[in-house]
Image 1 (cartoon, rainbow, N blue to C red):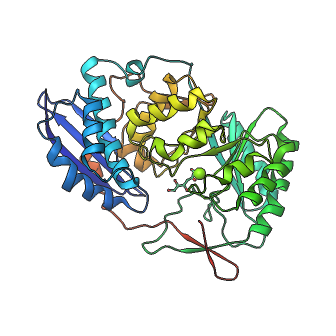
Image 2: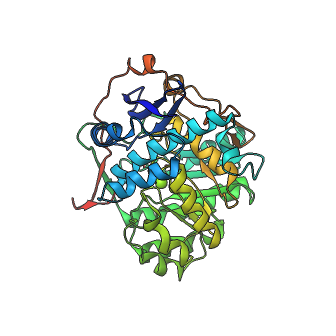
Length: 402
Ligand code: KDG
Ligand code: MG
């Protein structure tokens, strides 16, 4: 058994995706997501120039060895570009292993630990008065957990709130667009949003909120405390992720659970947060944290420390990443929640898949492997379009975290 072809496919059915497709000498194929929002071509070049030549002729059954080869062999360890490239190879190899075994990947990971994967959806509204309708629409679709984001009075654009009313896609122009931010307006407003949602929807609905790395630790501590009456399931990314000591400070002031990890790419980014029990959910993803092999390692460490998973699942992670995440979510003992932002119909056509959402739960495909593919002919009809994530400036013009 050997790998005879490795294709890196870039496509833009509404937004950019990078995919690695491996082919074995038996004609078995495997796919891996390699999309890094706003930096797609860096991963495409890394795969094409440095990884694909080393894959040809390798035994696809040796998943762990290939992972170690790409990680240790690069010498330059970690980083989003390297780890996304490794993830693509690893994901494709698990897909191939499942197809050879005739089993869905979750069976290779130990089998199902639950009936389905509880997903959280996104409710967003331009103003407070529109929040109840936005949440009601998610409840009507049977989501049991809802992330709530709302436009901030006095700010023209807010993270997580689509200006067009369509699905939220922040990478909106080749050169980053500029958004504005005010911590004082935000801190004063957010508790009123959750007061409204709790009073209208009662205690059972799980509620989440994404701060998107914008606060200092003491500001985040204050927000966490002011949200305690509304019993959030988690407060996400309260401070920029590289400032890990900040979590000790936040933790010492509030019992609002904390979730972090979407920008992490290895176990070394979250080991201390997990081992010191400074967070409650770790939100790394298959595509940005080294694939199924490495994410499993992160979740296993988390399980020892009462930390649950909460994998990132925004639309810039392709349906291949979602398919892979669902196999892992179904199998691990410490699953928490899975983010679910449905892709557009165009994207779903380019990536035909067998996973589905029903009664608040996501279910992976029962087909051998991951149960997802890329339609290469269709993909070729959507050429790459440069698109960057925005930047943020304070009202006095100072650059702030986005
Ligand atoms: O590419 C960046 C997005 O994936 C990110 O902004 C989405 O924070 C996000 C989330 O929680 O889905
Ligand atoms: Mg987030």
